[in-house]
Amino acid sequence: MKLLDLHINGFGKFHDCSMEFADGLNVVYGKNEAGKSTLHSFIRSMLFGMERQRGRAARTDQFSKYKPWDLKNGYEGRLRLESGGHVYRIERNFQNAREFTIVDETLGREVEPTKALMDQLLCGLSETAYNNTISIGQLKSATDSGMVSELKNYIANMNTSGSMALNITKASAFLKSQRKELERQMVPEAARSYTTLLGDIRNIEREISTPEYENHLTEYQTRKSQAKQELDALQKEKEDLLQKIARGRQVLENNKFTNEASIQEYEEHSEGIYNDYIAAKDLCEKKSRTIAPVLTLVLGFLSAMGSIGLAVLTAKFWKPLFNLTTSLHLNRYFPSASALVLAVLLIAAGCILLAKNSSYRKDMNYCQKLLQEIFSRHLGDTSVSAQAMDAFRDRMVEFKRLSRAVLSSEEAVAKLTEKMDLLRQQQTGFGAEIEKQQKLQWELEKKLEHLASCKTQAEALKEVLKENDRISQELAAIDLAQETMTELSTSIRDSFGLYLNKEASDLISGITGGIYTSMSIDENLNVFMNTKTKLVPIDQVSSGTMDQVYLALRLAAAKLIQTGPERMPLVFDDSFVLYDDDRLKTALKWLVSAFDGQIIIFTCHQREAQMLTANQIDYHLISI
Image (cartoon, rainbow, N blue to C red; front, side):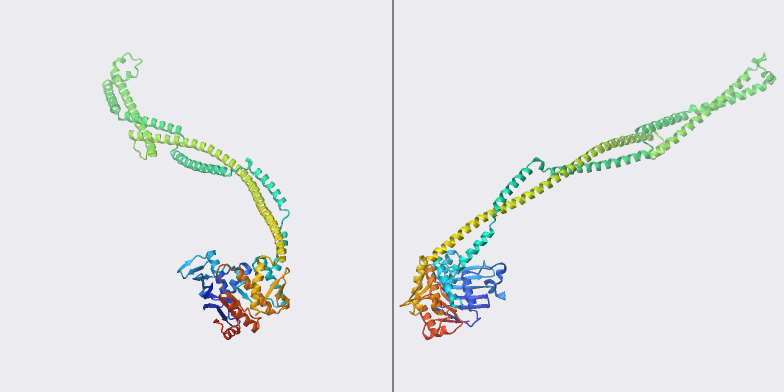
């Protein structure tokens, strides 16, 4: 696999920056702070991505470190590389980790970044392996003793697992601290507390399952509400009836009635008056009643005149008239006296008849006046007639009907009042039941809250018990890991360590120019350099030689752990700072001849390019 070119839209200090790489050796030259490490980080981030940290760690993570100050061009870029005869373009948007695409330019289509494809492009390396093998910097420790310690850890890590992420010394200390931390996290009383809580839960569940706590609150609230609605409806009906009764009573009172009996009595009284009126009217309207008194008076006057005439004619007999009882000749004067008596009687009879006629008319007028008042009050008309009397009777029928309706309404009101009283009693009873149910439900709610709390605590304790089991397993795993590391450290020459030792030894001769032919590592991780005469402990060699051993180990590890037919490019980031000119010259010549893949050297010195030019070694110079 080899890198072809890159383009940075925005990454660290770079904006809209492009760079091309050639086959073989590439020297990227730039002064201090020119951005070499930024370019190196960009290549690694394009290949493996960049994970954004959370919390406080986000302030100093790689994402924040290389985030552009000006995001107008985005926080993104692309990298083109060749692998397996195909040219691939990797595009990443670091602001949104999901925006990651790979385009197969040879086939002209986007491809899915599957694990198989990524393993092919990255030659089976993880980011950790990449950082610890082909991405090579100078040995970080500043002192010789520190460099020896770091070399020992590096060798031990590769020998035990082939992974350069592990530091044996730090790992052992970490496992011990982890053990203490896990032991501190253990909760010894969790099992007993869990058992107690389960007992409480069973007791509470048994309590709340009794019929006493059965919830009837909604039922009673519904019944009370229904009773209230019915009561409101009855109250409205009662009020309507009371208004109707009041209006009926007012009508009856306005007409001087109190009940149906008073109406009947009034009607009968009025019927009597009407009958008297009709009778008097009939009498007054008879002609015989008018003519008879006149004729009687006329006859009386005529008789009186006749008797006077007879008396004048028989004046000589007047005196004896007053002595009739004594006179023997009374019959002689009888005609004139009879005529006079008859006249008196006739006149008296005529006067009597006239008086009776006057009495009849007076009675008729009186009855008519009474009827006019009655009809005016109830019919609004003073006319006295049979039709008016019929209308009056109809009016009385209406009053009777009204009186009966009022009475019926009053009886209905009484029944409604009884029903409403019963409903109010029911409401009171429902209210008491509701209060009782509310109290029971409050108690139930408290018990349920306690039950929920117990269950929550039980679940938490269950998790604690699981955590205790997990911690116990982890403690066992830590013990096993410590035992395994101890065993592996005593068998340094087994498995991967043997191959690493052999591969690194093969590289030592070339990288040191034949000064040292091989290296060996004992069971205590002590490194020895082999010469033709003796074994030289690593702590007796110079810092430059230790750096060469460090380089040889990384290259050997890279060769061993990469899978597939291709190899990733070697990337050197100021890796030759401790090399003198002779060592640098030897190392460069050896790299070009020993590694036929792509090599990228980031450097702040011009001596690498000068030495390559002086020794006529082909290279591609990139200045930043």
